[in-house]
Image (cartoon, rainbow, N blue to C red):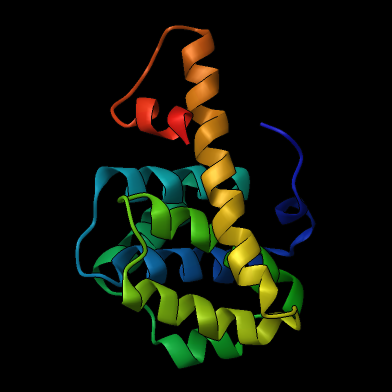
Length: 151
């Protein structure tokens, strides 16, 4: 895995970052394997201790109160949660309106221009294509790779 700005977050902000991602995972009321996998990857990326991971997984069943959670995010954490939140929101094949609603609120904390939302949606599409291409290189496709590579 490549270095990332998540490495620069303090422990409390890392917990908040993961909590926002868990909130997005659970927003549509359906947890799919890909969302849980993406959340696990984010916890690994943030070097969340295994005991803390167990507690954070509970957020999927009992999401934190959105206003309280978002009120504690700092700008840097909100920016990373926005980026990775778009990835998680796309995991199940499309963006649910409840996921987008959370992402819009996270965006409001970031201080970033509104155009970043469309740019992140495009970035997610590129990430899907790059992942599919990597699997194609080693002849290990998954369902959906063909359509990702056609785009």
